[in-house]
Image (cartoon, rainbow, N blue to C red; front, side, top):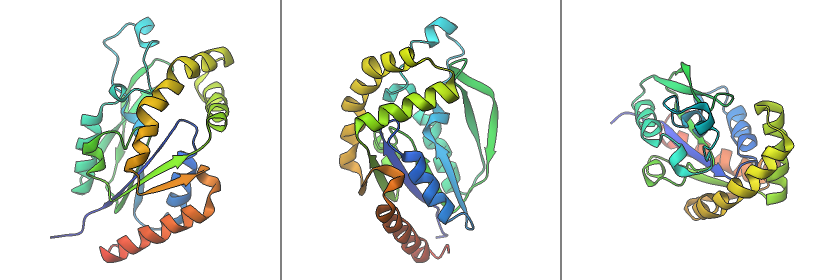
Length: 211
């Protein structure tokens, strides 16, 4: 049996610092064979809906994601096959026409708010992380991101947080913490936890004779 890539799942609430943790791990192994798959790329296509209907999409609910496609793509990557990763257009609230060709690598980081929610995804992971950050920090980070990157207004971000983000976090995201092998408080600022994670990944890679 040949070598198989390792899959690292990094979950946590919106604005928790998942991306910072992901970047820290990626940067450490950048000279090796590593890639990042963002769960956000796998929001369901909504081109069959009118634009006004798309505005009501709950992006923090498990049903917002096309996990079937994501799982198939992870399986392809585990078999060292190229995938065509979808691109999501947050302005039009649907999947874009273009795709991104992704070559298989020895280390796959799967990052997103609900990557630990689906048991089928968890079964594909060698390591499961949950980034745990206080709610007030998360809402500030989300507000800054949505205003700068997604053209949102302050009022719309706050309204969405109160009516959707917070209840969805409590109902679906927070409970997935129990599936994590390691909980990382304060995200990318927790250098000790990230160093421990890097060491663990190195050990697994050496055991699989990938490094």
